[in-house]
Each structure stands twice: as C-alpha cells, then as structure tokens.
Length: 434
Image (cartoon, rainbow, N blue to C red):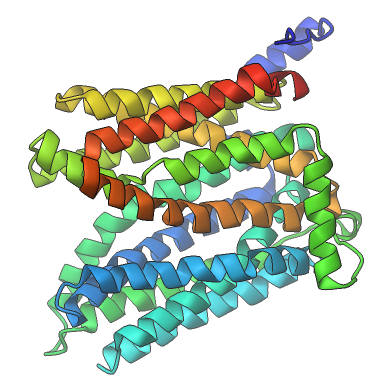
C-alpha cells in the first residue's frame, strides 16, 4: 500500500486554530443554527410518532409482528422507488422552497394519521398507505435537506455541520421514545373513553413540531448566487439520474467509499434486532438494563458526532473512514463474544462512535467530491442506503439468528465487514485516494 502523502508544513497560527476548533463550530452561522434547532424539535416529534405508530399497530392487530414488518417494508419500498427521482428533482429546484413543500406534506400526513386515529376508523392498511406516503415524501426531503447544508456553512466547516446534523435524529432518539411513553400516559388520563386518543395525541404533537421547521425555512437567508450555483439545469429525468451516477462511478474513491458504507449498513444488524435477543438470552438482563444497552449505542453515536465535528476539515478522511470501519468491526466482535453487561455497554458505546465516524465521513465526501448542482442526486444514494438497505439487511440477519443463533450471526456479519474493510485498505488503497 502506498504511503499516505504528507502535507506542507502549516503556519503555527493556523495549526493552533485547527486544534482549537469547537465541536459546535457550525452553530456560529445563523442559518444553520436556526435550522439545526428546529430540526431537533421536529425529530423528537418524529420519534413520538414512530413509537406511537408501532404501539397502535400492535394494539389494533392484537400484537402481530407481521403487521409491524409490513408497515416497515412499505416505507422502505418507497425509498427504493423514489429516492433517485427525489434527488434529481431536488437538484433542479430552489432547495429552501422545495423543503417548505416536503415539510408541509409531512405535517399533513401526521395530522391525517392523528385524525383517523382519534375518530376510531384507523385500520392497518391505512397505516401502511400513510407509511408509504411518508417514505415517498422523505425520498424528496432528505436529499434536498442534505444538499442545502453546504449553502449554510463555508466548506471548511462542512464536516462539522454534517456531524452536528447527525446528532439531531440520534439525540432525539435519546429523548423521543421516553417522551412518547410519558405523553401516552398523560393523554391516557384525559382520553374520555377513547382508547386510541393517547396515540392520536402524539401524532398531533408530531404534526405541530413541523411548524418550527417551516418558520425557519421561511426565514432562511441564502445568497442568491449560492442558491443558483446549487441548482442543476432542467432536463430529462432519467438522463439527470444517469449523469449523477456516472459522476460517482468516475470518481477515484466514491464507489469504494459507498461500498464500504453499504456493507456496514446491510451486514450490520440493527440494534432493534440484536439487543433484545442478546439482552434476554445471553446477558439475562431486566428491562432497565436492556434500556441501558439501547442508550449506550445512542450515546456513542452522539459522542462520535462530537468527535468528528471537533476535527473540522480533517485532511485524512480516507484514514478516518477505514479506521472507523475497523473499530466498528472490533466493537461488534467484542459484543458478540461478551457475557458481561459492562463489557457489552462499552462495546456498544464504541460501536456507536465508530458508526457515526463512517456515516459522517461518507456524507462529507459525497458533498465535497461532486459538483454543487449534483448534490441532491448524489445524496439520494445516502438516503437509499440508510432508509432502504439498512432495513433490507435485517431480513437475512433475522433468518440467520433463527438458524444459528444471535452470537454466531453477529460474528459472521462483523467478520464480513471487517474483511471488506481490510480489502479497501490494502488492495484498493482507499486511504491514498482521499
């Protein structure tokens, strides 16, 4: 493998500035700060709906896990159908105005779910349909939101901003599920005989949470030249999609970066799949301890985001990506072999930190190695992988768990990702190309 090239010596003052970069550096910029705060509120509302929707499905189907799987599959299917289309249209639109539309539609869908729930007419097929519609809207919303960030912060603070963006949903995951349970109890005390009122209350709260984002988007002040530079010329949709994919394919490093990230997402079983199995069958934990396992992974993700954010415009992104992949593999191997609660907590903490390192670095490279007018289409790849490939990978993982057990399944999955990471490091020399 070729040696990592060294950079020319920088002035002492510049090196000091880089060492002292704040993990919250990007929040100095008004536009990004306002959007970031509003998205935290909205993401908490999203978690209120995620938890309440799952409980509602179980309630009206008498605890059918198949119904839950169908709802998840409907949302994932929408990303496979519309992700590339959403990215292409986002590139050809004013992203601020485009997000005003998608956020309004998401708010409308939340209110519709709340209305049919409180009226007592909700059925599983309605929830499946709304989940598909919600995934469709997100297929357009996520690429536009991601490609808007480079218009809100300078390039040298982009990696910091992307890391802070990753805190939004993961931080909300730390608060949202607990708040959802509390609000269900609160609404239960005021339900007036309506057994579905507590779930509807959380759906309405989610709808209201979009108002802050809509107000901020209306207030955003984006320079006209930056907005126009990030807009692609209108053309045939399929040709536009092919052009973006060709841009990624011709890049020296992006195909391998995306393949590594995709391997992690597909072969890495989600926490919601493996933690209940390990907690009950391997570690023999009570409910409170199982909750701590989930929290350890979430806390690790937040810490990982802060660590990456503090690096600023880090020069050796390829090295960071591959080290994160290898740490992710090691932590998952330790978790699979552990029979001690404390070791499992530490492994999950490292797991969350390294997973954020992979994700934030991949998104930064996608944002910076393609032309501004293609960012929406390229970011649709990220949306497709997170929202589509991740749940798709849980299907074979769940089958393997039933066949050979949780520990062997996790060992096999971690080994596949680890071996592929070594291949990228040694055979493809990804570090050298970044």
